[in-house]
Image (cartoon, rainbow, N blue to C red; front, side):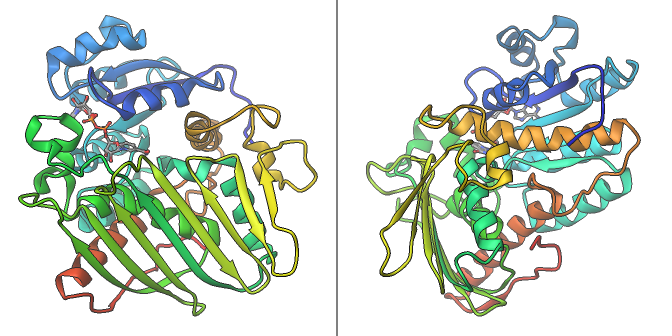
Length: 396
Ligand code: NAD
C-alpha cells in the first residue's frame, strides 16, 4: 500500500558495470513495474568504465558518474523530483558499508545487496546511521520475494504446519569446484579473497541466503550455532563448503549447508520445514511449486496461482502472471523493490514507514545475516563449539 505520488521514483545504481553480474538484475527489477526509472549511475570502480557502461542502461552521459562520491554531490545539487530518490548498491562486499553509509548520511534511501557489510561491526554501525538519517533501507535477500516463499511464511505463521521442529536449508553450487579465481574470473576473484569477501567465502556468499530464507519463512528466533567450514580446493583462502546446526528458541533444530564445490549443481537453494502437523519443501530452481505433506494424506503440490483459493493474500499480491506462466528470479527480485517503493513513497509523502519487520528484508536482517556469518566462523575456528547468536535485532 502506498499513498499517491504523481511521478516515477528516480533510481541510481552503484556497480553493474561492463562484465558484472547482479547490477543488471537490479536495473531490471527496479523498473519492472514501471514505478521507477534508472536515471543515474556510478557503475564501476574504474571511472572510465563507469561512464562507458552507462549506455547499456540508457543513463544520460551527464548522470554517468566516475565515482559514487561524485554521484552523491551532483545528485544532491538537483531538486527533489529530479535527483535520485534511492540508490541500489551492487558492488563487492567490502565496499557496501562505505557506499551505503555515504548515501544514507546524504539522506538518500538505499537498496543494498547482501551480505550487508564486510563484518558485523560495520553492520551494527550501519543500523545507527540508517536510524539517525531516517532513510528507507532494503537488503536484496531476493528469495523472500517468491510468491510460494511468502505462501509458506503465511502457512507457517498461521500454524498450519503446527509447531515447527526442524528446518533444513541448503544452497548448493558447483562453480568453484576448480580454482576459477586464479584464471582471473572476476566474480570468483573477489569472492575468494578475504580482503574483499569478508571472513567467510561460501557461507558469506550463499549460506546467508539460506539462513535468511529459513528465518523469513518460519519467523523462529535463533539461539545458538555450531558450524564447520572447510576449504576443499587447496590453496583457496576462504571456505567453499560448510554446515551449521542452529538451535532455535522454541526448541527446533535447523541446519544450513552451503557448497560451491558440488559437481553439476547450479543455484540449488532449497528448504524443508517439519512441523507437528505437516512439512513443506521448496526449491528455488523450481520456484513455482511447493510440496506440503501430512502423514496419511495425499501429498499436496502447491503451484503459484494468483487465483487459487488456497493462496494467501501476500502470495497472491506477489504474482504478476496467471498460473502456469513461469515467474522466477527477476520477478521475485522486483517484489523486494515493490515493497521497498511503498516505504520510499511514504517517506516522500512525509508519512511514517516501518523500518523493522518489513515485507522486504531490511537493515536489521542485514545485521542478523552478518551475525550469522561471524558466529559461524567463530564456531568453526573453535572446532564446532556452540556459540550464542545474539538475536536482539532479528525479525520474528
Ligand atoms: P561483480 O564483480 O560482477 O560486479 C561488481 C561491480 O561493482 C563491478 O562493475 C565493479 O566495477 C563495481 N564496483 C566495485 N567497486 C565499486 C565502487 N567503489 N564504485 C562503483 N562500482 C564499483 O559482482 P556481483 O557478482 O554482481 O556481486 C555484487 C554484489 O551483489 C555482491 O555483494 C554479491 O554478494 C551480491 N550478489 C547478490 C546476488 C543476489 O542474488 N542477491 C547475486 C549475486 C551477487
